[in-house]
Image 1 (cartoon, rainbow, N blue to C red):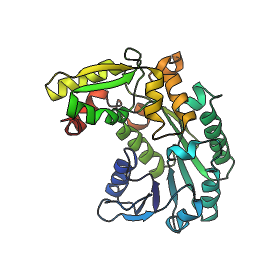
Image 2: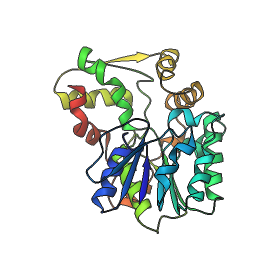
Image 3: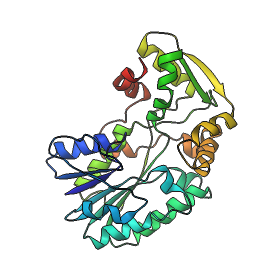
Image 4: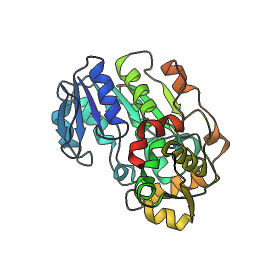
Length: 279
């Protein structure tokens, strides 16, 4: 059995489906009740209380570990989940980390994530670490304003990064959970090209067939919006990257293609699959 945390999100949902399609027994874990693919067991758990995950881990051979925003805070204890997995006989953990662990190692949330990576490596479990950059699905934050006002509001309109499609992250995670050849690997995951918020807006407009206006936010305005959902430290780390990405954060990583045997999806591919959210 394979346990998927964050199973109803942009990565967990396609990952759960891919594992079920591969014939695996899957336990999907989320904070709240949710629909899951046929044949998949669903359990609720709050990873901030690791003991609540214990029933899901009984009999599990592998775990996909995705931390919600609050578990990236410096005072969180996500390492307890790794210990719990080992205690329940889980053999393999695939951890969703962050590109910033390597590119900006001194950020508060990056230090915490590096500590979790190190704990996993020293746990005696089989492990694989995935370090994605910015997500194409962050554009869902614009969906309501596009639907109601035909407007995208975002900071740093002409500064881009190679955003990654969460479906590609899910496919890489599935490959790492299902086979042995990726054990001990650390994979940086990006999309195939750098794309700016203004270009993303143009892509959404083209898919809709209607004009969409771009409105540039200040950093303070963007942080105020982000901290409704994530800790201030994580918002600052993210804004530091998207305001002035380093050369290493602009690099197109070959890792997704190496694992999947195909190029990663573009932002346009992501929009084409999700355009209904913006109509």
